[in-house]
Length: 267
Image (cartoon, rainbow, N blue to C red; front, side, top):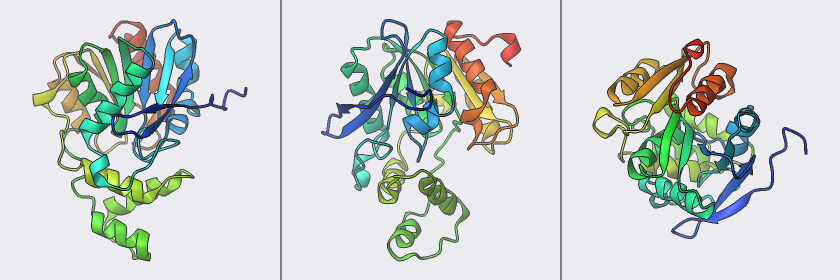
């Protein structure tokens, strides 16, 4: 199998009967890390094609990657009610249960980092530590104009709002994405639980954000607010290309392999 070819996915059923595609890499007897992708991406695009699964398994880790609902090979409901933070965390727990994982590490990026933040709180006994990339405080979806996005999808109406247009461009970038499902996800998750000092997980955390990302300082402040967090600035990267950075992978692996600390040369 080519290093760029992912293994066949295995479906896990969510609590509400959705099929969630999962992928397994490495030795199942090794310590497990569960990786959770960002908005409009997928397990393969975010983690496999960028070298993460290769480097994590070379470091002696067992990797489970999940296509979050609405993404990749997982089911893509069009109802906003199918997308809340509580539901996405419950999906993650179902994956843990399906693979008989009592204790794991978690790596998430952007949307996946927000899910990882909440999961670390709710599943504290099962998540040892977490690497959370591209995570701001607050609600980054609050300014998304759902009505404008739907009008654009249904009728081709121009979208004048820059943030809404950027999210739609992200949604279109990956072949196979379902724009209606992704807009439903945005609507469903707005106003829900958001990362902040008042709900920071207690586990060791590594927060990482690109030096060219607009959320850099908000992400750094979030790390400072958590009781046991380290911050890593990914040099020369923005929000969209940070997952491809070797420096990010090395910092994450150092943190996970070092029991929750980042080697000085990685900072």
